[in-house]
Length: 208
Image (cartoon, rainbow, N blue to C red; front, side):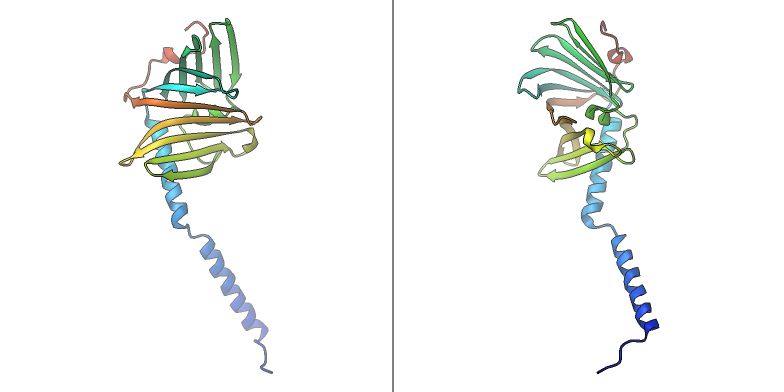
């Protein structure tokens, strides 16, 4: 029977193996690097898409549809509905205002626990307080899903982009709240004007 390694030798070899494993664990894979690059591209898009305008079709949790015009600046969003009737949604400065002119109703809420709030931090940082839960890159498409790092169960925001020639264009905003209710906006004719919208568009007043 061959004698075993001396204890000191075995300890030295084990220490070297653990060091090697730790080093390997710290080396980012190609997939990780690719995802990091995609996340940075989305960050840049959301922080620079000033004067963005698009037509939208919204699908509510009950399957109902609405449509209108969306306007976006980094940190603020406005939806003006033409169907099923005149309504508006304004989200800015950490708060949301929804006005239904048909019913003469006004709803206000904080964006702090709403999935839409993940889109409207200014500047947008898809790290730290926000965690990217999924990145999917298809043919001419990119999709990222976001949640709050400290309360992922409070809701998920998924953004879908066309990705043609390395240029992103926002196509889908999908929100899943804490009750697993889904709201989806499908966008068409998305274009950024390069200059910010007037501040008056994003005031949290029912009459503006």
